[in-house]
Length: 324
Image 1 (cartoon, rainbow, N blue to C red):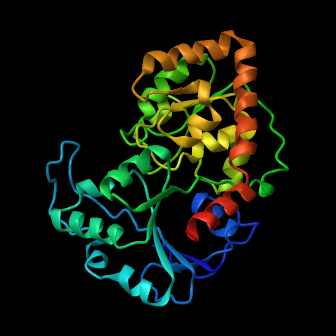
Image 2 (cartoon, rainbow, N blue to C red):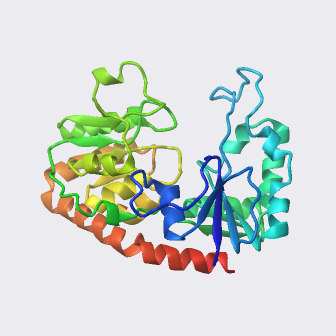
């Protein structure tokens, strides 16, 4: 089976097994031995073309009021029937969810309609989580919708020997998208040094509250992560869930959003409604006070990672889906 991915990235080719920045989409491409192209390229001769359409930009405040009048960078792409053109020279075209399923709701009206029509013209939809499939099945009745699980190519980090330290990491910065403020408050419950990541959403002054890891390639991120004992990721934005999966690989108990599959599957005892800070705080206390509970959560995370997120299971599952 020949598979191609189309994204906004500019390179052409395959992802080698030793790629130092093996984030989720690269892991997918490598596992499926797929070719990558820019979304504007002409592609032909593939059994399945998977389109990861760029999120683009929105110019609204949190209440939906327009801040500025600027064109969404993806508007022009949406006016072209590129899916129809792909279908002329390839067997099937699939849309792969990028970010939260509701993101396009903040586009201008014409872009919302064009985006909807673009997905509708695809042969199937690949979603991040089971909760996302419920959304897409309602939006596109009768359309094939399946989960494309988040994936790690763990062979390139298997030599990392965790040296666990008494510290906790939170999964995002102080922005609504990441829920970093809430994660920070719950992380204080552990009474150990708090660390977070550096991202585009980092707010001035965060460095006065907790430590920040520098932006690094994925393999280096995994080395850094391996030293943590606890994790909190109360991110309200339901997306790929790589943070919870990375934690599970090392058996780091992570308190997080139960709508995210990697959290629900790998950390079932620590999955909470993202706004249920009371329950999140109780679980943090239990992880500290109940050593058996901590050990249980750590073991379940690693066991479920191995059971549900191994490379062979992923490739067999996705190739079966693409052949439907």
